[in-house]
Image 1 (tube, one colour):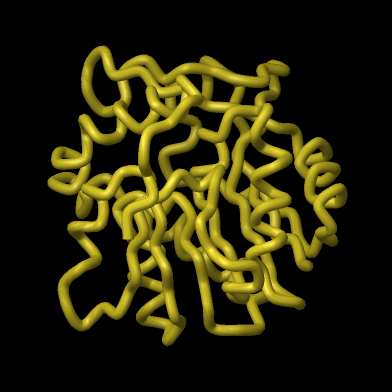
Image 2 (tube, rainbow, N blue to C red):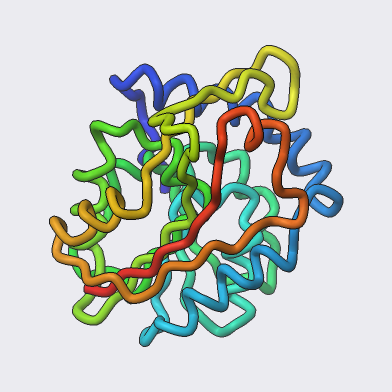
Length: 224
């Protein structure tokens, strides 16, 4: 399905264009630029709290996590604003549904999922849309459902930053930070209860971008 459409928010448009430009190159590099151990730890944290089978990988990118969830026996829906990313998850035997969608405006019925997984995708949602997006995810979850957000805080107090050269030169993407307490407040306001907070780090941390902007990764699991 394709619900990506045209976007009135200029930041969402810019980020979509930035990732569309690098889709083919990112797919080509997928086996060399991937931190398996970091992704494994984040998925394990999510799966520890997941009680059902229906999972939405929101902002799935190249689909590494979608593939891993499917291999785990879960019913996976992969959603991303860049449909070119789905090329790596469409071949059999993977039974993964794919939806081209702006994750800040999800297009599913209430209660459609038992778990929603956001790995490094919430950081692209503009701050004025972050609270409403979390509320939308709460509605998509069945009772007892869980939400995972892999996010970043800035030790320098930044609320947003720009990646000027996303994989290629002159390809800017806008990103947004939230301290863990601010994210927890948004989760609570949407009806979630905090289940876990971790501070797992990727193998290449800190990257030059992380140093420049004081970025500190963290992971949150919240339950409905």
